[in-house]
Image (cartoon, rainbow, N blue to C red):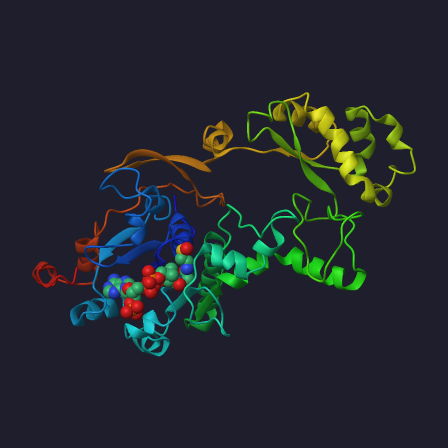
Length: 415
Ligand code: CAO
């Protein structure tokens, strides 16, 4: 079946996590992604967190499916000549080098435009223009600089980073959207353009509700759905909210049967206002339906912890799945805390291709997260990540190089 991005050629200069997540998505939508790696070394993640000696790590394989790999020393004279051909050949260059690296290689935006005015140049950096624009950045730095860490965790503890890679994979997603928009605009403008996504900006975008709360706090000096209310104090900055819901319907994580030994025997529970009556009936507190101290959302705010305690008393007699089943029969929103072990074994995620088993030539079979975005006319088939330089000869031949020229580059260690 045809794919959404059939015919789009991506010069993939990405490494580590943020950029590769972006180009992997584009590959899943059908783009021909040519990953350019340094000869002899490759993307550093090939060897990071290895679980099998001399085999590409899961870190690498899970971020580079469906791509082709070529090796090229882009700092050598003959390597630069090949890179020029690639720039002419491709539609989009994606990179997440440290600031200035592409310029130092001799491929400034101006030079790329001379070579191919239709080329879209997409970059991820840690920070946008400003005091930190020259800094190298990794995931957790972005989480800290983008507002996630200061608003995550409990009030009496230090800032916390989250397991979700919102700085890397989150910014990769932002960049992918920018690239697709630029490809669309190119249809009418006929020109390429620069697409830039800073990791700090991406994290801040995902922390939008916290900037909302910052302004509410400045105006009202209190946030009644936060666990600090009514007993604790509020300062001038949005505090860490523990497990409080980020929206208008208060929620909290509560214990379920087995919590003493199972670190994930918990449920996220939401006291959604329209089903308050049903909540009271299920947990055995029918008197709260009409009691003026509990009957309205406003009256419940200073009593949220008492209410979550009462719900927890009930959920501690049920497993998280039993509690979820029963709450759902009454349309009460809640969700089990699922471990990676449970997710890996979940049949419905396998059925939709959100979790896939992939066969790798040297690793064998492993699990990966497939494409979380489903297009009805462009289904995703997840293929193994490439071995280092697996497609060098094939791609160079497509660029018009003869077998003799390719051998000469190999002899010079350019590829
Ligand atoms: N041939 C020759 N040289 C190559 C090459 C190739 N095929 N590919 C890369 N290089 C060179 C680069 O040109 C650069 O050289 P200079 O420093 O001399 O200009 C050098 O390799 C190293 O690149 P780098 O600085 O990007 O890599 P690093 O390991 O030092 O830094 C990182 C890594 C991620 C901190 C940095 O790239 C960065 O800040 N990127 C932007 C933000 C980002 O994406 N961070 C997320 C990473 S995932 O957590």
